[in-house]
Length: 200
Image (cartoon, rainbow, N blue to C red; front, side, top):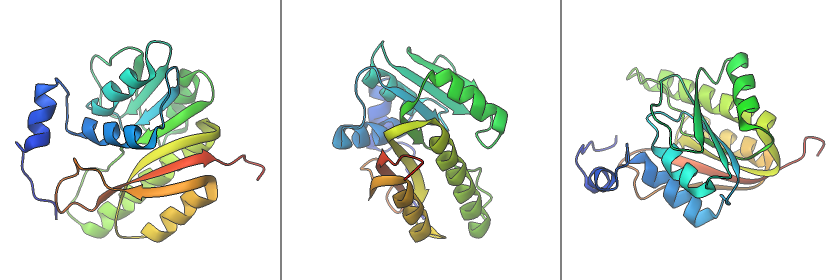
């Protein structure tokens, strides 16, 4: 179980930089290390509230880029060029709205989706895997061939099968842990590059 330290150094760093959450440092680390984002890129950010990733992604793509955030919760004042959609990514209508808002094949899909925790491990793991499956399905619709995906995943459950599923869809798959992840947390991120063409 993760050690909860509400005022740890990443919390303080986030406040000092005017960021809405420590999660911003996770995507910042991943995209810097993996060089996944170019200026003018099109990105869909699933599970975007409260907006920590949106800020980093919007800065990375610049004014000519496009970032579309999707979440059940409203994300106030998204930074340009980001826009947000309030909706459920497991709902077909929300998926269509998000794809249309991206404005063309996406270069990157990010997912920080997580369920509301019940405290029942098996239930929470199943809900997390359900959301991850929805994110993969969205990426299958939205990503351009050769595109990339970053997705939160938790160790446990069908973890090996999840990694295998990503390997089926992408040329390169890496599992990483970020420095900003709380000590003791089972949270990991899958970084997948080279979305395979649907006919391969």
